[in-house]
Structures are given as C-alpha cells and as structure tokens.
Image (cartoon, rainbow, N blue to C red; front, side, top):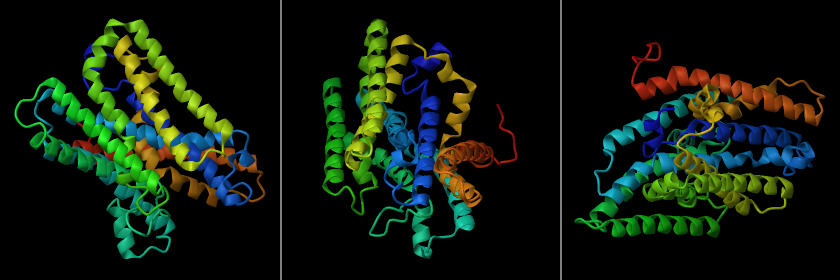
Length: 383
C-alpha cells in the first residue's frame, strides 16, 4: 500500500475487509434464522436450541450496522469535510449519479430474479412497485417477504439523498459568510448530534411501528461515521505523533467490539431486541473507529486486511448481501428430509456462503462494475 493512499482523507484501508466481514456475518445470521424458522418452535427465537454456536451466529445481524457506519464515513465524509473546511461541496449531480449507479442496478436485477423465481408473496402490483422504489418499509404494509434485507437499502438510499439537502441547508443558513473553524466545527457537530438524538427518540418511541425500519429510525446508526470524518482533521496528526498510544487506543476499541459480541452471544436471547440493536451499532462503530485509528497511527494496516481475498470479497459484498437469502431459499428447497438439526445448519451455512460468493462475483462482473464504469457488460474496462 502506498503512503499517499493511506494519507488520503476519507480512505479506509480496511474498508474491503470490513465490508466482507459485515456481509458474511449477515449470511451466517440468516443461515441460522432459516433453519430455526423452518423447524418452528422451540427452535424459533432460541438460537441455542439450533446449535451451541447458534447464539454467536445470531449476532451476525451486527453486520448491517457496520455497513451503516461505513456509509456515514465514506459517503458522508466529503460533505462533512467541505462544511468544516469551507471548501466547495461535492457536485450534487455527479455524487447522485455515482450513488445511484452503485446501489440501484444490482438491486433491481436481483429483485426481478427473486420475483420470477419465488413469486410475489401475494403482493399486488403497487406493492411490487414499492419494492423497486426502495420503499418496502414505508407505510402500513411492510413488504419484507420478497427481499427481507431490502429495508436497509431503503435507509441507505434515503441517507444518500438527504446528505446534499442537509449540507445545502447548513451552508445557506447557519454557515453564511466566512465563519471561523470553531463555529464550523460547532455547527457540524451540533447538526450531527441533533440528528442522532432525534432519530434515537423516534426509534425508541415506537421500535416496532410502521416506520421503524426507515431512515427516520436509523439515521443515528450513520452518525458514528460522520463523527469520525469530522474528527479526522484534528485526530489524525495527533495519532501520527503518538503512534504507540494510537495503536493502543485502536486495539482497545477493537477489543471492546469483540467483548460486546461475546457478551451478547452469552446472554442471548435474554437481551431486549432494541438494546441488541443499539449494542450492535456500538460494535459496528467501534470496529470502524478501531480500524481507522490504527491506520492513522501506524500509517498502514496488517497484511491480511489488504489481501486479495479481502479486496475481492469487499468488492462483492453488496452482491453477497443482495443474493444470500435467495441462495438459502433455493438450497433449502433441495435439502433431503430427515436431516438432523445440526446437519441442516452447517449445510445451510456452507451452501449460503459458497452460493452467495459465486453469485455475487457474477453479479459484479455483469451488472455492478459495468454500471459503475458506464460500459456494456461484455466489454473489458480500459485501464
């Protein structure tokens, strides 16, 4: 890894590794859930009844919150730094074009294939259109049967669309003229804090309501990444000058994230769902913060994080996330009857991981990379 890449603001050297870890963790979570729900009571709701490792697999849903924290830093970072530094904000048209090309084409392709293969789950035409509009969890009918993980992508898209609007409002009202660095930092920090508090209040007020899986109730999960982007300018030089302390702090954050995971696995399923959600988000923010602090302090990351496998799985992570539930459904259709619970679980885990990775690699080659590079799928990119 070149020093210039490591020093570039907004660059996460461990980004692909974190994406891969998050996507595969969600696959493991849904592999355990698929077996538990297929068997019914007493397995449903009690991961320990499926396998001794079931409570650990059940914590894989934390991967969603890792994705949210990463989006806060990677996608929201340029807007935050522009507001803090008083520099021009990203061009809205180019920004939206990149974000839409990154998330929409692959989602539409996978959703269409799932509808053809598994049906509409009794949804009517308007409800299917809501699915394609990333709005499956807005309103009174939550359409989570076809692509259950689609609610997170609706939150992601709403976050992408909200960033330029919020940045423009702050720049046009509070940050008019040429305010100093302290005022800019106070305004940006106050704005992030306000969004966090309002979103947490909304989420806690009605955690199982009709809008609980929308950006209104999940915006707080993006703010750890926004705060890291806001602190980067001051924190990075200090860490570079105090490398030992910086690495120790990074290891402490990573150890804390691992401790949260272990604690939840040992106490499952006694922890209330809303508290699990908050702890998972804390764990996701801790992983991202630990990875960034290590990078800023050491100037590099361990070689395993920069391996070819980590980069490949990171590139395919969105596809893995999109296809893994469909891969599990297809696998369970062909499982022979009479298998033991443990056998079902590990066949499901191995099959979903392998099938999702292969399908995601194909999806990247045929859909995602061409959409990002604006070329036809059968043309090789020009390097």
